[in-house]
Amino acid sequence: MANFISIFRIFVAFLAIYLLFWKTTLGYGLALLLTAIAFALDGLDGYIARKFNESSDLGSVLDIMGDRIVEASYWIVFAVLGWINILFPLICITRAFVTDSLRSVALSQGYTAFGAKSMQSSKWGQLICSSKITRISYAVAKVAAFILLIAANTPGIEIFEHYETVNTVAQVFAWIAIIFCVVRGIPVVLESGKLFENAKNGKA
Image (tube, rainbow, N blue to C red; front, side, top):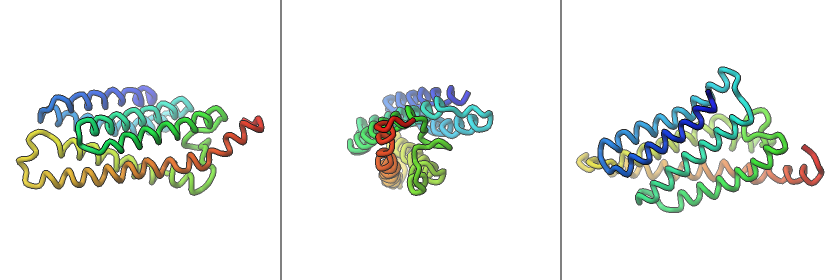
């Protein structure tokens, strides 16, 4: 069930993104709702995996894969629509390729991104990359940025007096989210040397 949710939320996000091209108030309202659901499902899959003891290496991979697809898709579409700078999707995608390439090496040696078998061995690496507080903070920044960007660009919102403030706040959260994205990838890069040492020495 947890793995199904990880995959299902990708399609929820795709539907939300599709609705953004309707350019209607209704479409944007539905897109906003579906975006909130997609991010809620991100937390639900982990809860179910822990609740029903469904945690697995496959589940960890599917969870990260879903995160990457959903996050990159939103940044790309927001840039295409002209709501954010093109640097946002470029940074997100570059970071994803770098960290996930290193994590694939880690997975081949029995490590996972998070949890008891995390590839992050240092305390600071665990704090920045895999601690609950940083993961939640990053998720909150992303969902706030995505929802507010949609709200700020909803057709008809310009009739409200302070609609420009919504866009300003959305941009602030977007920068916070992309900074989190980069910072949380740093420990993965800096601690990856041991993986290649293990491979060189023939260690699992």
